[in-house]
Length: 362
Image 1 (cartoon, rainbow, N blue to C red):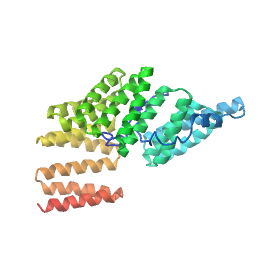
Image 2 (image 1 turned 90 degrees about the vertical axis):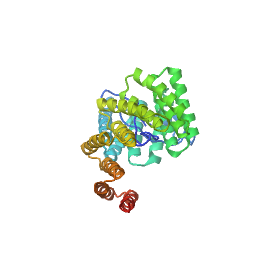
Image 3 (image 1 turned 135 degrees about the vertical axis):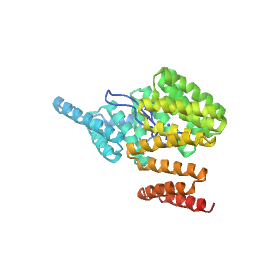
């Protein structure tokens, strides 16, 4: 299971840092996702789930057909999640869940809840996501799947970061780190240390965050996790934005961009580009910043992601405004406003229109 960033900005912010593991040959790295506090009452205990699965024996042929159908639905649901069709993914995964429940396959249930949680997060149905991940954690405890416990705890901690509960999040990540120590999980070390770094940064201790990120990078490199490494490098770049030099930022974001490109990790590519654009723009290297924005816009269009196109247009507008080229800046702001309107993001649309009004007064 690899960590994935769903929060775009736990992309530096708590990406809602989320998490998926390569548990079956056909499953690849997925993205980060949000979950609710570990300290709340668990939605389903391990005992509850086990008792629910004590059912009458099922005919062997029926069992085989049912399992094949559930496995197909599980693959379909994960593919739909990756393609951004989370509503369809949830439907597929709920069907798989029902079958796995009927045949009493705890391991498959755990994996299905994991993917189901991701789908609910993408749909912003966070209470349902909480229930899914808590059931996933309960099953992992029931089956003594310590690796899955590590990732589930990190997911919970990530949501706590998103909610601003930094100290509780830190305690949750520490629990995950202790389990990683007990089973010597380098994946778990890297993920938990990276998230502890995020917590330190949110608490304003950027020096500590840098140390934690660097330690996390050692483990992520050992296990050959380019996506996790790129994510941690982006987090490190953001810490350097506060306490580092221009060279620190450029070197770190540049490394993240190269890794993300190699891994075809669009999320971390966009994050790294944003960091580089800000760093270059701050020292007047506008040509390089515009080159990077051109790449960013191309990625957004390739993904057919209007939200990322909007961000690209806004970044273009801000740079041109900084250069005093107000007519060009206004053109890009207007394009961003059109996308905000199409996305029914009224708050963003109002902010962009206000920005244009303020700019034209200069």
